[in-house]
Amino acid sequence: MPRFANLDSHIPIGHGALKWMWQRRLAGLPKPPAEGYAAFAQRSFMRPDFTAEPASAAPRVWWLGHATVLLRIAGLHIITDPHFSLRASPFSFIGPKRYVPAPAAADALPRIDVVLISHNHYDHLDDASIRALLRANPGIVFYAPSGLAPWLRNRGAMHVRELGWWQSHEYKALDIHCVPAQHWSSRYILDRNHTLWCGWVLRAKDFNFYFSGDTGYSPRLAEIASRLGSPDLAALPIGAYAPRWFMGPQHVDPPEAVKLHRELGIRHSLAIHWGTFEPADDSLDEPDRLLRQALASQDMTEKDFWIIRQGEGRALRQK
Image (cartoon, rainbow, N blue to C red):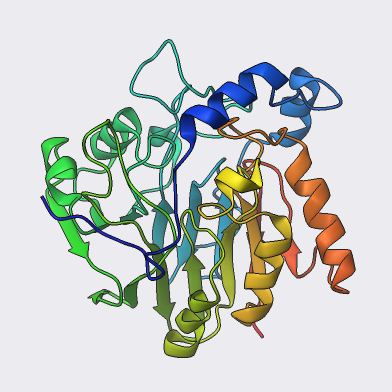
């Protein structure tokens, strides 16, 4: 089996996992949200309205929790790393659980044209969610990083396009580009880095969208903008960053997300990958608080970097 590596292959990722899990248990981390889980979930959730504007109107995005983003552009609906299940786990009874309900089930979404998969971790590639999407949209087209096509075809996907970093493909009015991320892959003990991980850039007329997937910070990510142009909208992760000695190489924290926003010249960013599961030591309500602090330190506001509820939508107005 091939093994994939990061652009900076010397950076250790995932080493010390047992030490981290032991320390986490001893410290009783993560701590609950300050207001409690139930109140946090109520505050963070809204039922999405997918009929707010006609499909031909301005690009619109909905955050559906964790790394699941629904984008409407050029009359198409594209969804990233779809996850609607109760747990991010191979098991239904153990593993990180969802604290904020999924805003919509797969069969309640608009007709989905394209699915973008960033990597194979259970909080990004969920078996039940993929099967549910396929039942609702049998002709859906999947874009996945190298090595994941067999997994998707085994779940019934008929249209899978597998790409490596910097490869691209045209789909109707979209140019779809697979771009680097600093992360890793695995679904069980013996398959570490046997499949690739990535981000995605969608280019349409007068619109450029960047979905980073999971990534640690690297100055080399700025090459995405230098090659493909600065994004009009980016979905950037802000959670699952603690402790930094373990999570730092694989997940950006809020200040690093703001740094990426600046270095890539992003017009608007959407904060994702927080407030849904507890995959790391940061509390559910910590990432957005730290993001606001990081924005203020850079003379930026939530008009630049959107912090919205799960299920909420935003339109991107013309420049």
